[in-house]
Image (cartoon, rainbow, N blue to C red):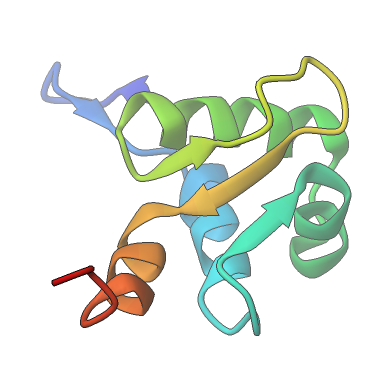
Amino acid sequence: MKRGLAGRYENSTTASETVRAFVPAPLPFANLNYVCTRTGLSFPAVSKAMETLSRLNIIDEITGRKRDRIFAYKEYVRILKEGTERL
């Protein structure tokens, strides 16, 4: 995120491009290399964008590792889980 002209924080273009990498994907999960390939952005840009999206509670890092991390698009996972709860 960056501070806009009005002094409010705005999402960066990099973060929105990163979100778009999840939307047409067949699975709601992605690693940094996959997002780099889908968006054409550099690894550092994608890494920073994923951290921003994680802070905004849009995605979750699900491996708990520092390298080879995998991220899950939370809303996509929520939709997939609908109707699968145990009775």
